[in-house]
Image (cartoon, rainbow, N blue to C red; front, side):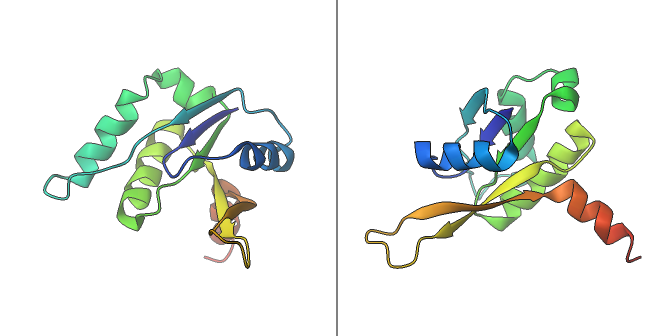
Length: 126
């Protein structure tokens, strides 16, 4: 599986938990910086960001893909729209949560969000 990390670095503990929850190995991890210029179009910057990853059209559509989204909602929303356009489906994403009482603040993998399954289920409520 290809893991695209658009957020803070993931620890070995995070990666082990993601592997466990996904039931498959992470074959490749790409850490992708998402520091955007607020004076420029976020749509254009997201497009350029995904182009910089270097995947071919068929790879976007065939590689098993998981995403750790950036925490800034506008970038995450555009990123999901662009990924859906390239892949043909919404990717699975990672939800981290703070570990209660940890000092300094630490985070753990809470769950994997199967966005396409969530979307498909929501269609039943139309």
